[in-house]
Length: 84
Image (cartoon, rainbow, N blue to C red):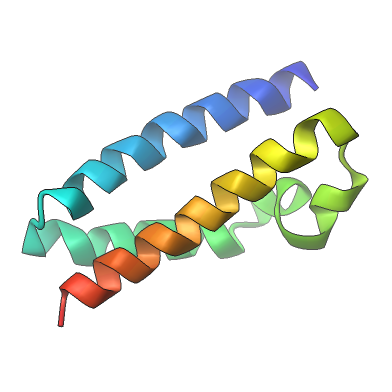
């Protein structure tokens, strides 16, 4: 539980950095943001805290992980939309 909380903090911090690139509308960075965050969505190392696996986490952790993945999806969409 402690390590998952630490991992969540690290992912949130990294996501904030990627979000800043999207928000600044930096074209070369947007495609990298999409690639990086899409990798998170399929990375086997994150499988235990993603998708249906979240249901197996303690209830106190579930919402934070769901919120992270919702924001990841949102940022991918923003970065993809701004590339057009």
